[in-house]
Image (tube, one colour):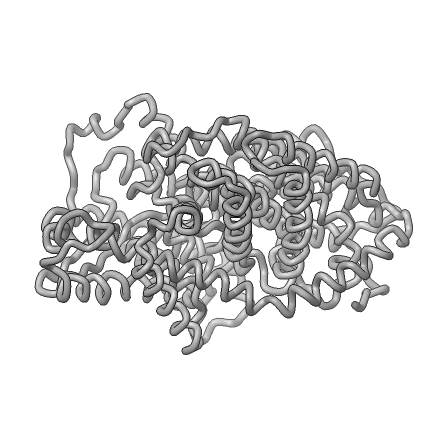
Length: 633
């Protein structure tokens, strides 16, 4: 480990400026709830989440610097710290907890209570932050020169570019506004169909695209490489596997279907074959992809853990300058012990004291892995789902060996997996935020308190969001497929009861292994195979826009970077805007209010869908390619 002793933060250690204030807490909590809800909606629809740190930083800079006329960069940093905590907690929770609702819908149990969801999320969130405190000196300070923490560094750059805060913030708000309008037109008024499809009747396959702004935004942000792998996965499922199943099995009844494959196709089209068979193949591929990413990371995991343990020996030896102040070690140890007791005593997490200690030990291990991984490859490539799968495998086998079978054992495994998943997500987010603070000269202790504030607010809100979306549409439906949680449910059921269509799952396993051998990243391909091709195609559109903007000639790199950044901010706004309208439509659905009744069923048809899709693309180009950083002739 090589600490950069010559490093000087933007705000010197001896200078004290406002950080945790009433303004920063209120704005941060609002952003934590807003971005947490929007990211929960996105993740349950797509199976992917995006970092909210940069848009939160831009909005906080706009509010504090432009609206309130205050020049306080560390106050803005606390806002984004609190705000991004909500997004990360939501990401950890939605990967697992909806499985409990799915079992309840099948009559195998009851929906989790709001208290249960809050306690599970809060336990994981607190542990994720507390584990990161002693690791800060080892990973953020000592390895400043070797661990870049991409999102944390980018967030610091945004805050440092304070003079552009107004224009950057307007780009985010434009994205939110336009996406809200488009989402309401498509899913609220239902003025146009949400999908454009073409079915190859002789083949049995189907191709098409959805027309949602958030999906285009996701594709733009993740880039052409990841979006193309997802699209190829969808194409393989819908134009290869579905036709093969129809060709060779049309007259047979194959589990889990209850009628002939030909009859399923006649009643539901290609989507019926996908839901009955291809989805299980995709689940096997995703599980394998998560485990492969974990295995490939194992040498790095071992080195990280060893280095972190060495760093812990010196964690309290550094000076007491403002920029070196962490939460006291006695507070950390008492908090960890208190959370372990809650896990032990809380009925929804069926473990004894030894099991609670095991969760804490596993949690610290995965927190260390997560914090190191995001430092190298960024939060988007953090194998949280692989860690969750590994935890579920171990937890389910342990509970089964203890005699806890059936729904009791399955819900217990999901509860344990949820705590670990939230720990890993929060440790990754906290490390990125602490990197931002390290570059800016923030007080680590105040950032850590900010993380806890964001976690508390989001833990109280996430249960309401999960209940709202479930009551409006139900998990596992076309509106809210909840792909990751459905996968976790399948894994636990398969181990506990053995009632999965294992032949389909193992087909997915070997497809994933083959994809890995030829050098294609398994996880995006597997997620694409698991999700509808129309969703993947919409993501691909965003990736193509990013690709074309990057490939332009006769444009200097500085202009390209500025335009791509404008596009990223606009897309982040689109994701948040669509997510918020999705939540609003869920509220209306709960009260049986259908805005489409205003139009008495009038629709513009597929032509209208094409026009809306073109308008979404044009607004993105207007805010990036033709925006304030356009090429001057």
